[in-house]
Amino acid sequence: MTSKERHQRRFKDDFRREQVKLIEAGELTISDVSRLYDVRWNSVKKWVEKFGTKPYGGVVIQSREEINRIKDLEKKNTHLEKLLGQQQVKMNYLEECLSLAKEQLGADFEKKIKRYY
Image (cartoon, rainbow, N blue to C red; front, side):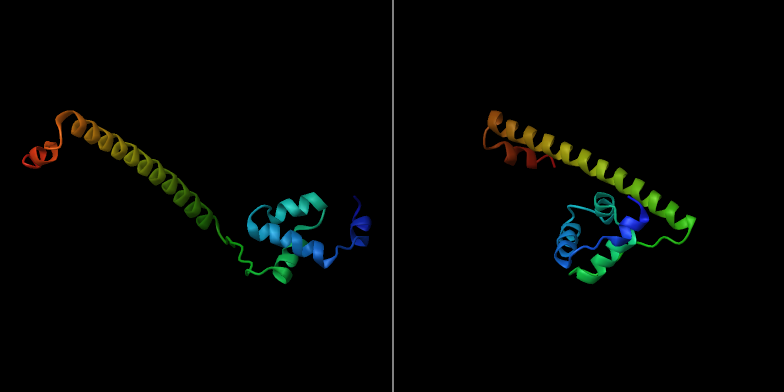
């Protein structure tokens, strides 16, 4: 689509509001709407600012250090999520072992085991 054709198009406010609702619901991004309807990204952003119920607060990155810091934080977050998942698996395993021990050794098992801990 040429820029002249793009300038001649007009979208109704109802259409714009509908797209903004989809963006705010997380079903689409500003970039998605921009690509789908061949509208400039800034125009869609203005729709969000005008018709949105939530304030638009995009993240502004100002330096290379901030980019590196964000990447480091994302790596740490991924690592911590992995550790948390491993700990959860261990807990589930131990709880299952405890349950099996109670079944096989009887109700007195907890009383007996507490003496050792």
